[in-house]
Amino acid sequence: MATKFLAFVNGKGGVGKTTSVFHVAGVLSKRGERVLVIDMDKQRNSTQSFVLENKPSYTIYDLMIPYRLSNNVLNEMRKSGVSFEGAVTKTLFKHHGNASPRYYGVDIICGDIRMDDQRELALVKSDEFANCIRGGSCEYDWVIVDMPPSNKEVNRITFAFVDHAVIPLTTDDTDSISGYGDIVKEVDAARSANPTLSVLGVYCSRYSPSSLSDYVRGEVEKFSTFIPVVIPRLAVIPEARALNRPLSFYHKGEALEAFESLVDEITRRIS
Ligand SMILES: Nc1ncnc2c1ncn2[C@@H]1O[C@H](COP(=O)(O)OP(=O)(O)O)[C@@H](O)[C@H]1O
Ligand SMILES: [Mg+2]
Image 1 (spheres, rainbow, N blue to C red):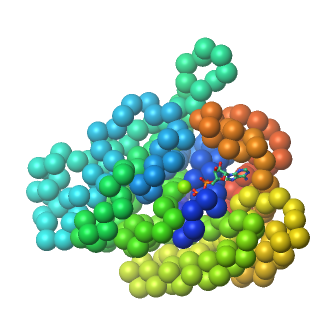
Image 2: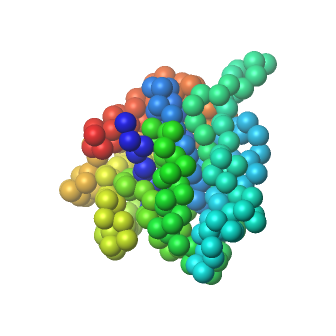
């Protein structure tokens, strides 16, 4: 099956992008899928969520450098030594007790603090970089991208190589209702460079009942791309990530079931 490329996107921080990437990757790997996570956020929260088998030679930022405008990519790659393989590392999860950490099928390209250098990123030829990522990823079933809150150049570069944008929203305030429209517009605009890109769906990512939350949830349900899955606000969700253990390898229960339903729905919409 062809590799599926999706990005968790929302211009707002703190809505559950990184949390979703981590647990969705865990559910997929538990099902035997080969997953590559790409951390596009300079805060590197995804990178920090995982136990890395080794420190990779290159980050996502290093990998982009040869693709700057006016550069000869091959010359630049030779000069810098950068390669896709050199940017990928395996991730491990810890068991309870003293057992050594185990590989479970998720690899990562790590984030980099320089990913907010808009001037430098603006030079990256996104179509050529897309070929690098898509070509390098052919061994994976899924490539899942963790996005920063709001970064014009990172959006431009990422939207050139992913096919699907998945939008987590929180229901704690009404901002998410207008925020959704902004993301859809941005994805629409990016389609001129990548016609295969689309919004796969929007879902409530950290829900606990209140009259405001229920109102926002009702509004979100009216969006045409609404995914009928609600991720509850539960302590076990951040707890598992803090312990570097995706829920699928940590705790059976309501939280895991919600992420499994999210993966089911994403898979159904893609295939
Ligand atoms: N379903 C959830 N239940 C409880 N806490 C959550 C849930 N989803 C996310 N969080 C917490 O909310 C905060 C923001 O989530 P995060 O995934 O880092 O957002 P983003 O990547 O969009 O900035 C983090 O502290 C995270 O642990
Ligand atoms: Mg994040």
